Image: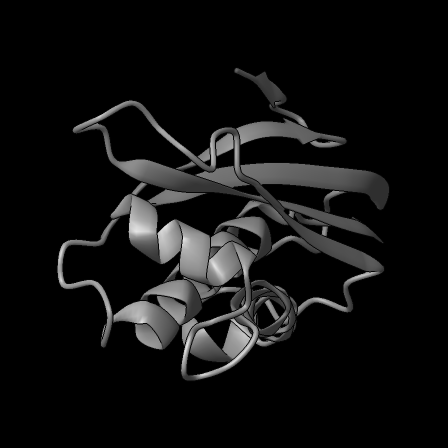
Length: 148
């Protein structure tokens, strides 16, 4: 692990995003809560938060951090995409802490596991789903900041 002992304690925040592309019928099933495995978005939200809290156990050499906040939200811009167009759920996670190291990995883990949960819960009804576009879009509070 990287030694962070000499770094200053600071309020740090990271935002990550990703998406799951699927058939429009799958998106409608999610929105109408007709997926056989249950309520998809709340389950994915809880899974993402739980994963962020366990990031230090999942990723080798990642510092275990006492997170102060984790939010996982979803955006469905179009329940009825144009003919032939796939549907998408966008996932956004925000992690926050006051510590010596950042929380980018926690935000990325939250998005990734939320996406995996959506995939798992819907794979029986849609074999075409694609998880993608997972990235850090901003991080603040450390030596290097990022805003995309």
